[in-house]
Length: 239
Image (tube, rainbow, N blue to C red; front, top):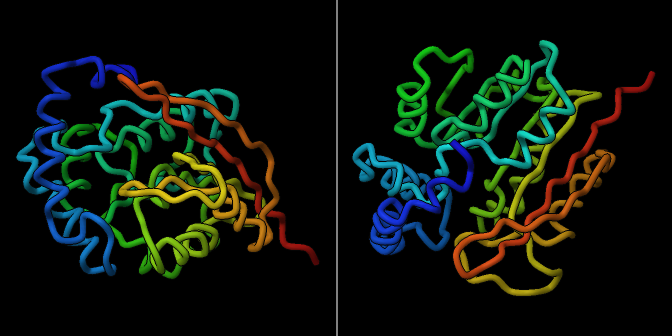
């Protein structure tokens, strides 16, 4: 299945639009503290009743830009972490590219759903909170993939997410950052709240070196959505 398939399915998208109106009215939909956002994500997955159309960000396929990057950067047994894995498509693509892959999501229902979809998976799926992950995950992963998490956060949580993500990458490892974007200094009425260049470049404050930065558009009916795929490298520890 391609990333665009669900968006070309009128019946699927009609169910998605109907679900979006319902979940946008839930507490935590427009931001809030960590507990509000966690409760919102859990409600989105639990109220979906197994219908992926009710999960606004679920394309039932890995991100095309990620797949293209993985084709040129196979894992060869290195470790990888997929942040906020949702229904598992990106994590499965990373594992298929040869990475020993761990994936986590704030929603326990999302994790169980991913396991059901990929019953023969090699991915280690776990429920977890980006801001309260196991201590031994710090600096552990050769590849960390972040897609659409930062744009889903607002305020203090968004600020803290950059540091939390940076802490997961091993010395010499890479961070693949894929999010919607907006021009610097412009406002966003989210969610999602597309990221500005100054936000994703904050990884440089944590010692990361920008390797590549690619801009592209994802076309949807009646709109074109700008994105960035920024790849950072964390230098080896000297001395």
